[in-house]
Every structure is written in C-alpha cells, then in structure tokens.
Amino acid sequence: QVQLGESGGGLVQAGGSLRVSCAASGRTWNTYTMAWFRQAPGKERDFVEAINWSGTITNYADSVKGRFTISRDNAENTIYLQMNSLKPEDTAVYYCAAGPGHPELMVSSGNYPYWGQGTQVTVSS
Image 1 (cartoon, rainbow, N blue to C red):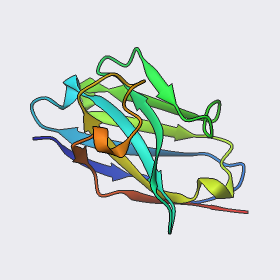
Image 2 (image 1 turned 120 degrees about the vertical axis):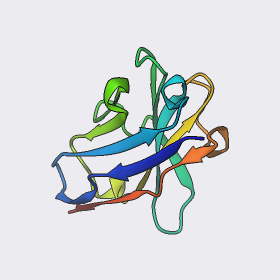
Image 3 (image 1 turned 180 degrees about the vertical axis):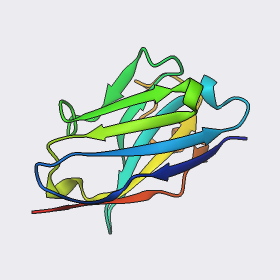
Image 4 (image 1 turned 90 degrees about the vertical axis):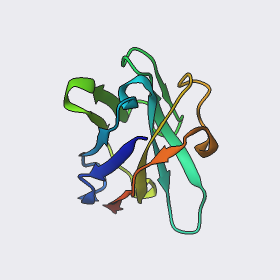
C-alpha cells in the first residue's frame, strides 16, 4: 500500500508562482511513477505531469509545458510541483498519484491505483 498526502495549495494572482508537495509513504512508493493530476469544477480529472522512480524521465501536458516542473526527493519521501506563470485556467484541485509504469504511457487517471486527497489551487485574474 502507498499513502499520499498533498499540501501547499492556496490562492495566488495570475502570473505568480506556487509549489505544492506530496508526502508519500509505504514500502514501495519510491519504485513507482508519480504524477500530478488536476480537476476543475464540472470537468474531468486531467493529467498534468509524471516522473519516473529515479527522477530521470518526465512527461508533461502541453498546457503546462515550460511553466510547471515536477520533481521528487526519494530520501525525503516527497514529490513537488513547481508552478510558475500561473493562469486563471490553472485553478483546480491538484491530486498526487502513484502507480507502476512508464511516465510517457501513464497519462490516464486509470493508470494510477494510489491517490492523495487533493489540494486546492486558485489563481485570480
């Protein structure tokens, strides 16, 4: 079993930056691909970014490429999502997820068996 818990969400103005974190626990979490998804009200849960177990392979959604950066610190049991140049359309609940597989193939929520509870990110215009 893997347990995940997000933190660091909040309210930020358009053009600003925010970093959200995901604390992970469980014997095998550091062997999994980790990802961030987001879900806006009334919309589906969308893929944002994924990173492989060693942090050497990442995959980004086109909507965040060049603005968001995913990273992981296996020694600290933490995944990060650094978000820069935020836009109002980035407003959503951000979820951390874990699962086995290659980041470039794992872009669907169904690929991930483990999820956190989510953290709200609101970008004001």
